[in-house]
Figure 1: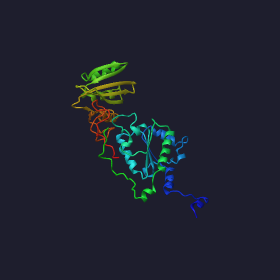
Figure 2: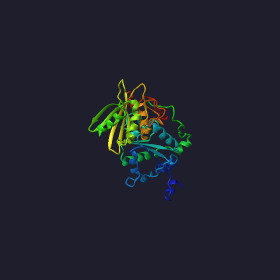
Figure 3: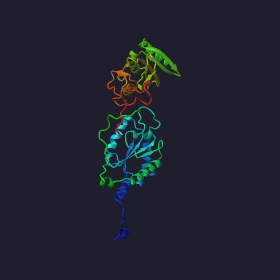
Figure 4: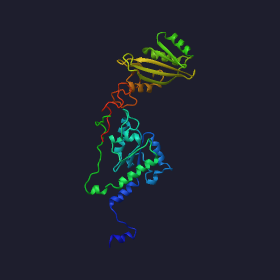
Length: 180
Length: 160
């Protein structure tokens, strides 16, 4: 019996990676890291008009333990960077980051001493969103881009081939610095 | 009203008011630095004036050799519906001023902010910690000699 005959009975064959990625990408629970005005647009994205739940990401969780994607929405100061990083570290793997808006992505209009000139200086970022603040459509686009990215990831393959999932060092908040 | 304020103050403290300036009915007084608390106490508790609210307290860096810093007190009298501005000079070598948080407790955080940004210390303040910058930060960012983008390596970031 070939696999082809199974398909007629409501079965299909695929790779396990694909199934896992399909499940992951359609239920990305966001960590709403709303630290300034971008958060308002993020809330609008969650509201009925733009409705982020169409893409499976309506479950905003306020504990990092239950989140998959951190949406950093706002100006990150040096003082706040430690907090953002700590919350990111507390999220379980696999995890992704959307850097929403000009401030989070590059410091934005705050080219001055207290503002981190882009959150990629202290944490990994998957998708950057332009705008000040970005329209909700723009954030949804970022989510779709992230979903495309997740589709291509290796999941079970990583384990089978002995690749270790990257776990960041804990307590990594001291010592390192940047030249502003 | 402005002349009345000056007269009442001069009668009470003949030497404390160094200079007065009036612009569009707004009165600004330069007060002797040492006398600020006693002048403030009088302004608040005097029944005729009753400057019972401190609207704002801030520092200024004039960046000059003598009397580099200023501390500015913006007062308001709810009874008389009248604003008043006091200014004092602070030296760079010894930037210490008596606290007015004992007069208006609302000045507490304003003085902390002024300390955080200019390094002006307020003697007798109950809790003179930094307001915005991290507590181990060593500089005062609103001083004119502080670079806009900060001192490299002075603010640590988490390791990537």
